[in-house]
Length: 200
Image (cartoon, rainbow, N blue to C red; front, side):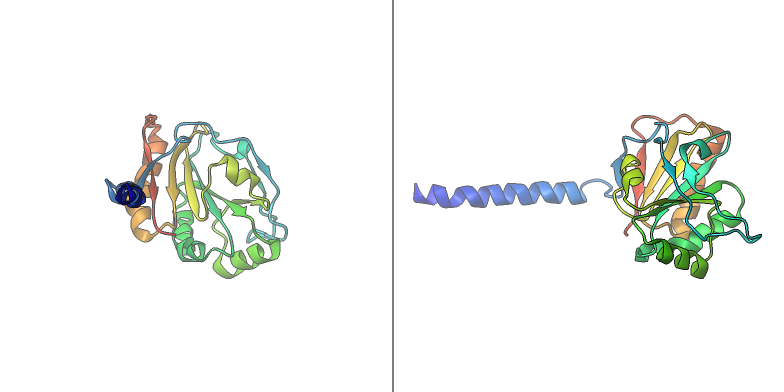
């Protein structure tokens, strides 16, 4: 009986460890189902980043649901100045913006305005609009796990694709641009479509 009492916790530990291993390593760990794919982008209205201006001196506007869709593909990037992977991916966003292919907008997540402004002044501003989400409420509605995350919004305002983690030159060329092309064509999105995850 004593042997059985000792063995039960060991058996439970091995079973849990096996389940954890299967969840972590079985199949492709970079692919996860996303409940948001194919749904309309959530309703939100975010104030602009105070002091952020365009090259002509005009203020960069904030961001709302009404700015998405409207017959044009939009890429929404959720970022923060305190996020090291955001700094690493920023040159990739600059290259995407330079293509003039999509409307690229940003949601500044749980950041101090001065720090966010300093980040964009130092690194360059690839965004046509930047909304400040100081309390993270809008990010919750978007289903954001952390930063950076990037969404492709179709011409109809529906979420076509979600990328978790920093964009790289490889993921831009091999993943994001093909997803943008699908959204430009208006390719139908199946409910079981998946999102892509890279290391933060």
